[in-house]
Structure formats: C-alpha cells, structure tokens
Length: 167
Picture 1 (cartoon, rainbow, N blue to C red):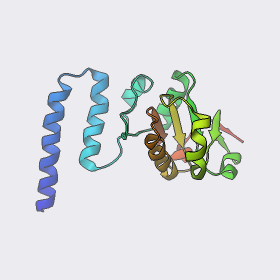
Picture 2: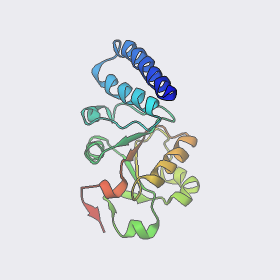
Picture 3: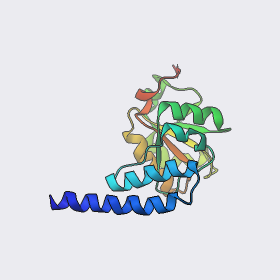
Picture 4: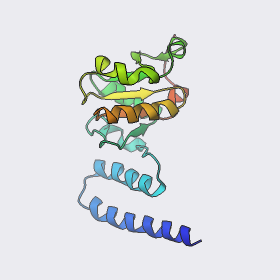
C-alpha cells in the first residue's frame, strides 16, 4: 500500500511539473509531453496519440525516447515524409513471405554491420518494424546507440499493418 501511495505521489508531482511546462507549450508539443510524462510514470515507451500525427514528420524524437506509432500514424508518416526509410528487421524468409511496400530487409542479427550502408544519414526518418514489435524495440536501441535520431516503431509489428503487403 505504501508503494502504491509513493507511486501516486510521484505521478501527481510529475503531472504538476508537466502542467507548468505545458502552459508554455503549443498544442502539438503538449500531446507528446503528456505521453512522455505518462510513460515515465508507468515506465513504458510513449505512444503518440492519433491527434499528434501531424507532428510526426516535423518533430524528431529525443535520443533514447523511441516513439511507437499505430498503423494509421505509420501510414500518415509514410505519405507525409519524403525519402522515409522503412526497415523490416525480420529474417529474410519472413521478409520474403510478405512485407510493407518499399521496405528494405535488415535482419536484426545483421543490423549493426549493415545499417550504415543502408542509411548513412543519421537524421533520416526511419520507420522500423518486425513481426509483432519485440525485435524492432531491440533494433531501435541499436539505432539510437549508433546515433540515429528520427526513428519510429510500428506498434504491433507487421501483424498490426492493415495496408498492402508485398509478397
């Protein structure tokens, strides 16, 4: 019970601090900051709300703060972002079985050795996915460790993709 009280108190303090910060922010920044505060309190990765899709191409996530986006947000990001790189981190056999249109195959186990050849610009917008979301989280850590800054993860992986699948 004491632990829950402390968690609630920390959450309340975070919300007060965020409220003060948000008072100085515009609407687009507010959506991301609220998600970040909630994620910090719950110790989870922030999920960008549907209303924040317009900011996806304009705001790069802060290093070590990956952004997980829904199918709808990913689709908007793909259509709104010129030269986006879509990376499938599954095995070559999984990739051959079906992948998102224009995706490139960079299997997770080869990523550290092949990413710089595939994406030399570390400020390039990257959408990364796997089968269900587990490998892409590991891949995001690798990308951030290597200095990539604009990385989005398709929440739920290709299983959540409702668009066309290239076979």
